[in-house]
Length: 88
Image 1 (cartoon, rainbow, N blue to C red):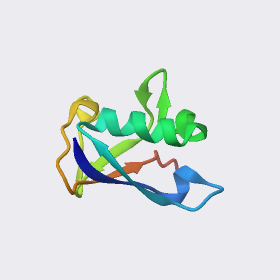
Image 2 (image 1 turned 90 degrees about the horizontal axis):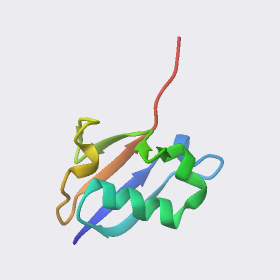
Image 3 (image 1 turned 90 degrees about the vertical axis):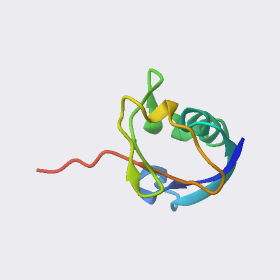
């Protein structure tokens, strides 16, 4: 397991401020499961029928949706959860 920092922006956690969570995880999917377990009210904002509703940025690099949940994590990684942005 790797010690990683997960960043949850305010747009995802509202009405609470954004935050960072330190956790031990081996994959992005494992990190998602731990975040949802720690913050169950965010589950519907993060997952829909077990599929991610957010994008993931690992150390500044956006992950492909088809591979994101299987992507391995290393000690010291930063994983950002990025909610969808709508506009017109």
